[in-house]
Length: 302
Image 1 (cartoon, rainbow, N blue to C red):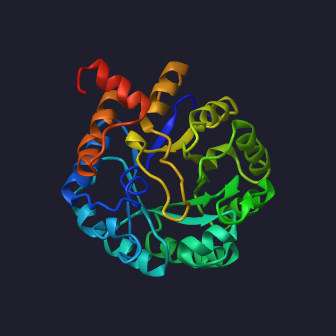
Image 2: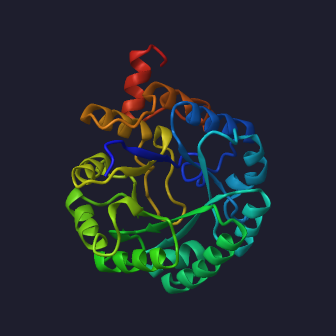
């Protein structure tokens, strides 16, 4: 495992998808570009999802035209075959898929069982590989500890989904603790089981901070050897299909943690802390992420 932490910034998509106030496209584009300039090499920019279900992301094609093309890796979430067609038509070469470890969640989210989603993914991956052979595919597996609709999730069920995704040719799996309930011990139980079917370098972790335990979980996973984590600038986010779910773990908090641990991310804490301010202003909100507040205050920016 590398001694460098990789942060996948998900604020522009996962951080905004549930917001009712529409953020203007040029503000989103500036957000993405500033995050790239801050040193974030992988950013989930948007999704080709139905505007009926996620109106905040209806500007996906326009947004992709405005973001700096040469600035690292831009991931785009693709929910189905129609979404894949739109992604390919817009020259997207890095796609993300979405499923879960509980059918209760996939039914609410994409109107499929877990098994049906995996069948669909096989076709999507095959078509994508044929049309974009140099492209990359990551997949989210949500509700890895608990589902808001089905209750507790067995680590062995998570491992089963991960195994099938890797067997169908997915390059990387992001393990999502969607509703932010897990203790570090519960995350380690998932890690232990998933490691039976997947090497650590094929895995990332996507934690929500609903109950303030996400950073503690990241710390334990770092000690176990993991080096890739999803996060959201300013702690933006939540989940429209997980009632009460808080935002993603803040990118600023992970930059601070990993820098202090001596495993740097190569990302500027101050620049990331500033990047989300116009977005928060559009939403009528003040910053709340702890490390974001601290660095802005230290620089007399709030």
